[in-house]
Length: 142
Image (cartoon, rainbow, N blue to C red; front, side, top):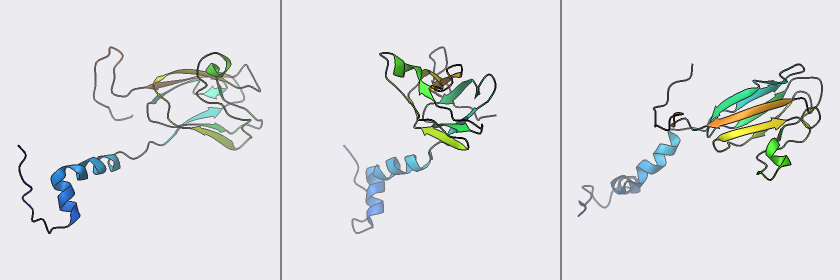
């Protein structure tokens, strides 16, 4: 049996929400602001994407930045198969970028449609799961 709220019923609505527990649910989201995007740079020489293998925590957007003098693109290899097409850009001009929303955990190979030799891998990991399947605490980034 639940206990009655100890506050007077004429108190402001914030106290009613606090008694019901609804207030805490809304404030938890404010404690975790959206993640800043991880950046992957287009390069004019091998490995062409820097880093070539980017490991990002789930919930993190990714931005490819073109600081080269030519256009490049980013196309998930799944777009060429029966796999779901997770992301695909148009040609990204010099001094521009391409941003994608956070992806679910997984391994995403990708390439440049304009320069097929350019290949990279995006690995999205669940930051709470260790490779042995056990749950671990988040460690601060170094």
